[in-house]
Length: 261
Image (cartoon, rainbow, N blue to C red; front, side):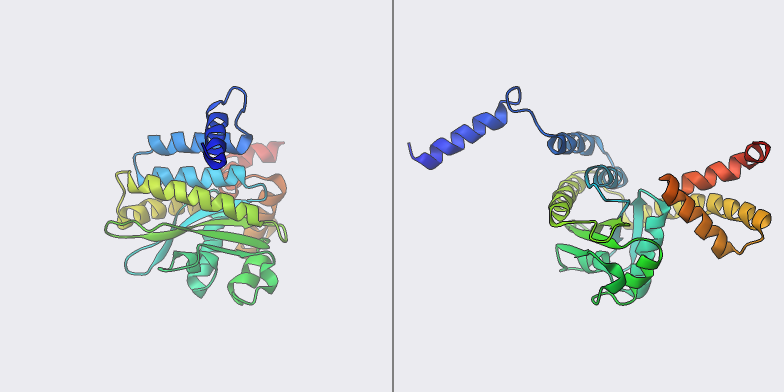
């Protein structure tokens, strides 16, 4: 038996012997992701598991989202971990530049990354606009396009507040996550592009409604503009490490309790 065949048998035995070679934390996360993806029955469920897992396993991932590009070329964000990601993705769609727009194009780069968005020459509009909102690094990984109609392509988007916050190893993990999700999407009862857009629109309306209520409370109490009120909410969200929509909901539903306290 050749040495290469012996090495393969030894590696196979070590891989199978989990009692003596326990899986590391990352491997456990991927195992859990696989179980969740197998249980997902819709494309929306698959994509939600994707962003949740990416947020958990990539250390400096502050907000995560998925971009989908329909057959007509339009982009939208069906799932994210925080409404701020909607705003950041929309900057890419409006400017028609950025890593997720590049990755979602067919054919596009597998991975796009910037360590300093404020000074990123590839995206002269999107980069500085994102940095102004407090996010300085970005990583986007392409999702494999569906082989069946409507053949949507897309990207997994990861934003970090830190300069150089996302590394080559994070790109490798994101690529594995995107591949897992792409394979799972191919085996689910996929929602159509219009259904995903409808679900995203309903979620966005709900989030914007409660954020609008919170902004109105701040505007009335502090005598500030709508833009200034949103900045107050965004900064508090970052400092408290609480999702923007959750913070807005707390303010909107419990502001009388806060007054008494």
